[in-house]
Image (cartoon, rainbow, N blue to C red):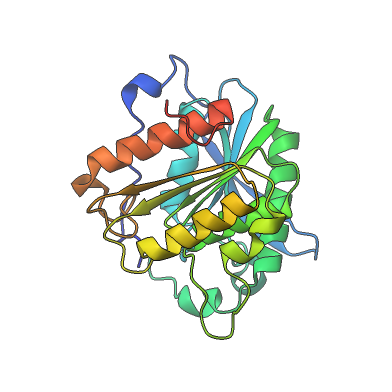
Length: 260
């Protein structure tokens, strides 16, 4: 599980917050290219032309990600977080008792990327965002890396602890395998104590991006576990604050090595 019941995102460092924040968030229903309707949560910044599509972890559009979208808006970034499970669970709001695992098993990268495309289009139409990034966490981190190869119009992608390995039956589908098609710059943020993403996997992905000449920057936080940004952020405040600075620095400058 990527975060417990009642988890909340870590605060944006106070010096990165503008005097005027966002306008709050609201639920919207989007339609994917296969006519699937799915729920999303949009939060508008008070101004600016930067936007972010948030790909959640395995729980889909949990309240954690709705609040995260609002925190991006407060930091001056238009944001929309979307749900993965419109095809199997509909568009209704769900509680912490939602049995997400059976729905995760029915998702497909192609339809998730189609939903990301719809979220990008909605953000462009509903806000002033023109430089759009995809940021993802856990399952969504992997999808964020994939998005670099699937959406030519993206300004960049940010993957928080997105799995880099290939499971049996998925050969040829790891992020490194898509590196030759990637175009958007990549920022990867990993936990040094995350057994599911060993340093060797990060190194292989790094080499693949270098070979493909994809602009990228990776940061590994010593001692931080998987999901450090949500499940245990109170124990890893320094890593979380740095992750905020790196994500916002990248979004505001277009340079994945930038830090706000």
